Image (cartoon, rainbow, N blue to C red):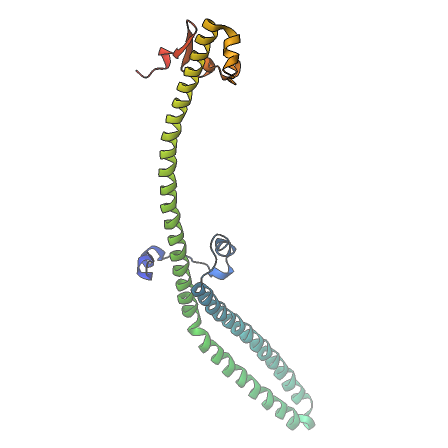
Length: 229
């Protein structure tokens, strides 16, 4: 039933697939069917990768802000060194310390950028796996639903035929009762009918009002205009 990644690869070429756990529509899917253990596992892996990427980006921004601050301070220190010859050695030592810190910033930025190089691909692959697992889950859900729908549709069709037959039988029995009652009432009178203790209300059970019936000479018969040609 499940399909592998190759089934979907060509269809997804060039498609902008969102990071699934951030997509509310994706989360809403699982109101219909709970997340499987595998989907929870893949989602956790994806969340961890994205968190690492975002944390690394923030770290690079912080380091660059520090580097910018250090560079600005070096400019001020050099101006101070020119204006205060007596303090030159002390100021130059501070400049050297700032230069060392800037070098460390550059190294840390390079290290973070190296760590970031593989993350987009890892995130894409993890997101792709999660998407395939999701599609397989709901493909099976739809397949199972379709099987059940077909079974219910077949049952409804059979019941509809039985219902139609029973409606016809109901009308036939009501016609028969009405005709018998009318005959006996006309021949023997209401006193004799009462002896049978029949709980029959001809006004309530009169089938003439039903489509396809009419009264003819005191007898209920089928109306020709409702008869199949």
